[in-house]
Length: 395
Image (tube, rainbow, N blue to C red):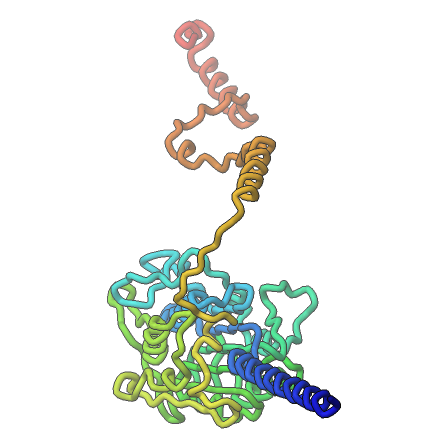
């Protein structure tokens, strides 16, 4: 009897151990799956898009920046997480034959200015000082939220810059410049202040690779349109506008991004190959030694899109609601509609009526002193010349 009891206790303990080991194995598998699912390690995305050039002949730089702005918005980054800096307003330039538009293709099919562009820094606000303040967060307390980069240590940040540059510098407004050392120190401040998780830096300018040579902060991946000693060339001249519409490197990058959707599995290695020298004429460069992850494991949407921690499924899920709940909610909606007064909008300025209405007759006002004096002089001359007997011809 005692032997049977001991045997049953041993079997029970063995079963318990097997259940625990199975449970721990399942838990470890779930943790591994979760870690793989959240492999990028970030929870939010930001974009800082900068055009540093003024004047009409730099139309293409504004089109570059607005095209990238359009792409990141299409992939899910909202305006609240985009800092857009344009040094000139080409849409309102008096030389623009099509006002309120900026085109990036010579057939003029795509207006990248659109009707929902939110420019945060424009014209003379685009300076080296303001750019560095945005990156490092050293801005006055009165600065509105739309002009702030409110990132944290879980933020992936895309920084795109375009303009005229040289070996180790990028010009702002043709009046000042930012050096590669200043830019590298700004990124180090961001890292020390926990303002980013990973950072992607893209620059389209002459000798662009010189701008990332001095970077030394971790988790930075950099791309440039040209190597040191090379020019970054323009693309698509438009005779109707009289200028080039885009730069070559940005044109092919955007052509690549048009094939990306929020669920794409395309990685950064594919982005490195979008503009070979045969297309760009210049030699694009990239730097990944500071980046901890392998670029082939970094999705394009980790920087160009919003964070979407969801699993895509092709299964159909039928959602059935309780009929009683649906009827009660329908009755409540009807009662709310009955209680709610119809919305009335204040009449705006009646432009159509103003254009077609007849001119209003002017009210009569008594003549001023000068007119009265002139009439008095005329009457005195008349009396002196003809006398009072000719007054009947006047009245």
